[in-house]
Image (cartoon, rainbow, N blue to C red; front, side):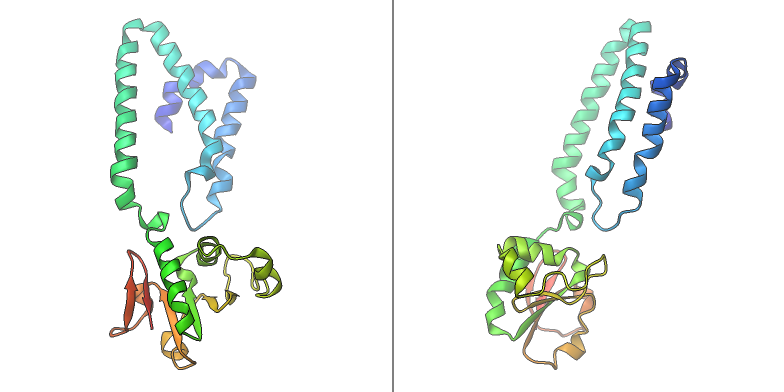
Length: 212
């Protein structure tokens, strides 16, 4: 951020008092909403942060190129290299390094557990997988009206949701595998570390397993 401010020449902006204070307030206030969120990191949460920095950077580049005309080509080359680096990181590295943050394998996990569900009395799904209820509703195309009237909607609500369910899928903060496996014929969906060694694994995904 300090480099951006330098490039943007805040001293130049400070001469125009109103624009300066508007941009300063924009840059200082924009990160606040995103700072109080949790779970999945998302660039959308800080989208309002970008225009202020972009305006400052654009003003800085404009004044530098205007003063040193020959440097314009260098700026263009650096910009293109930056774009190529961004595309490389986005399409080559991100799908591997950030797979967990973008829920790799969740669709198959939902559909596979739904296919196995009729063979069991219930399916316990760990909320430690994050946003599980939403994924099951979406990929199973579950009727929202049925969820509200028959299943009771979001029973617990809030960030620490627990015991919400749809059909025979129950979403828990803690699976308690050793206890729950004695309460009927149960299928479990959760993180590998939530299960003891020797558990029977039916399906395995990048960051989750289906076990019985």
